[in-house]
Length: 58
Image (cartoon, rainbow, N blue to C red; front, top):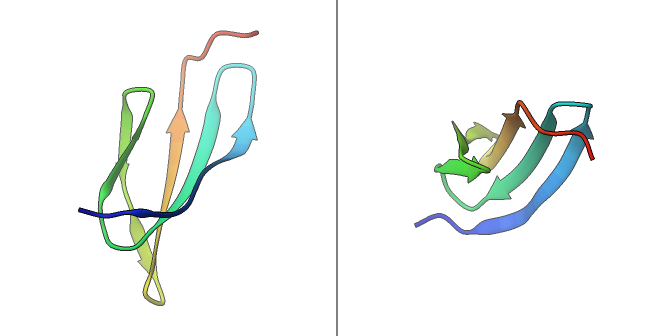
């Protein structure tokens, strides 16, 4: 099972969406608020970017 190295970090916040960023120690699927995405690899580091839509203001 993959473990978090860093994150989740809030990368962007809009009126109705947010983007989260993570770094993990191996490939995996990440989930935030019922939205999922696979990590990607750059030079042996595994990162995930996840855009969560339809958020309520406030």
